[in-house]
Each structure stands twice: as C-alpha cells, then as structure tokens.
Image 1 (cartoon, rainbow, N blue to C red):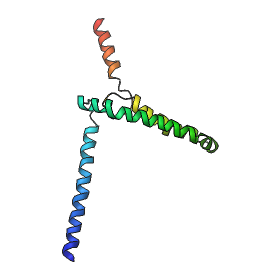
Image 2: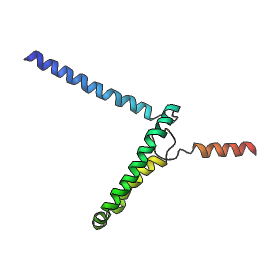
Image 3: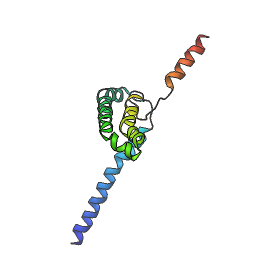
Image 4: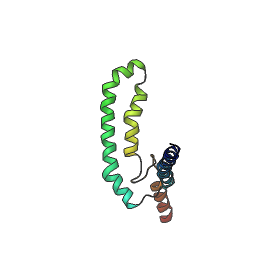
Amino acid sequence: MKKTTGARRAVTALLIACMMLPQALWAQSAIDESPNEWAMVGDLLVARPIGLVMTAGGAAVWLVSLPFTLLAGHAGEAAETLVLGPGEATFMRCLGCRVTGYTGKDVEAIRAAREAEE
C-alpha cells in the first residue's frame, strides 16, 4: 500500500511539473515584441478571424443583454467586456504581437525618415 502511495505522489508531482513548464516557456516568449513570419501568418489566418467572430458574437450577446444591463446600470462595463475587449485584441495590435495596443514603431520610423530627408 505504501509503495502505490509513493508512486502516486511521484506521478502527481511529475504531472504538475510538466503542466507548469510550458507556462514558464510561454511567459518568456510573450515578452518578445518582434514576431517571426510564422507568428504573423498564424495571427492573420487563425487569430484575427476568431477575434472577429468573438467581437460579432459579443456584440450580439451585448445587444440581447442590454435591457437587463441598463436596469442594473452596467451597460458600459458589459460593452467593454463583450465588444470592446475582443475588438481591441483583434484590431489594435501589430500582426503577430501578443500585446494589445499600438507599439508606435511605425510612427517612429516615419519620423526618422522625415528627419533623414531634411
């Protein structure tokens, strides 16, 4: 009986370690803001269409729940969660990036090009 209990604990510890290892590796790669071409293609063909569907679905759910959220006084919060959040993740990030929001790299490149012309 003691032998199986020790084996179960060892297997459980191994499974927990295996589940935590990919999370640590993903956290390291999430910091990188220079995506490669495969990340860009995957984002364009998979993530953006899913985000578009989630935005449209969130808008439909928000519209259905609007009378109830207006009564509760949380229509803005519901809109931000159901529509604006997925919309921002879909449309306001660079291709292949994981962080939402504009990085300003294009603005800096245009500014540098103008300064070089002058």
